[in-house]
Length: 250
Image 1 (cartoon, rainbow, N blue to C red):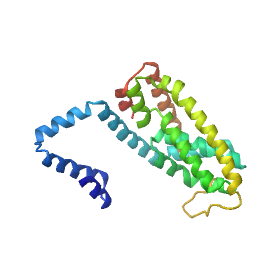
Image 2 (image 1 turned 60 degrees about the horizontal axis):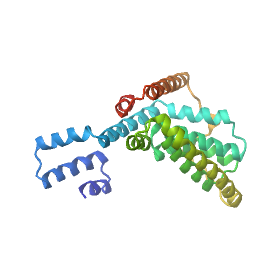
Image 3 (image 1 turned 45 degrees about the vertical axis):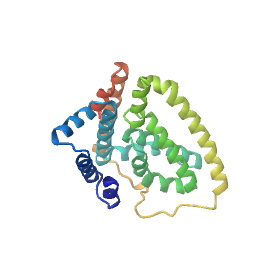
Image 4 (image 1 turned 90 degrees about the vertical axis):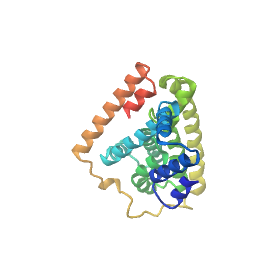
């Protein structure tokens, strides 16, 4: 209750968490020594490890945004697809959302990075807001399942005992393909229903991809990040590393 009150008072999550812990400690009669023992035991548990990885993963996402790695990736994806039709616009949304949400480990945060870049572009070729919303939602969820450092993936690996490779091969990839194909056909029907009836109103905070200038430094940073990320994930899969390795990777 203390945590919820702090959050609804627009205080930070960290402040709410600290107050909540203090109140809980008082109510249960814990002293400093007992709290230290509880924290030590919690961080040594599987759930504690997942929480730590998610926290580090959000830090990784923050760095990707500050260094413009995520921004550069979206730009490359969109330019490579060459959006000049509704279907190419839909494909650009799906690929961008899967990649960015999978790397950042957050659905809302990942799509927030994508939206200012892709919305003006897909609006120009006639993709409707309802279609865009459906694509971002499903593609972002798929990204969270595919990403090697997301909470969903790590928790599933811990519960099932599957390696990342086996999880992808026997569960995530088949399910994702079915989900994405079904969504694609559903969005085609959405387009048919709402084409000409709804459209985006472009605002000043949205980016025209034609005006985006990716610097040489941003390109180098993104390439180094991708090479390092892929190499470390591949090493973890090949050597069958556990969640401790994923904490280190974050």
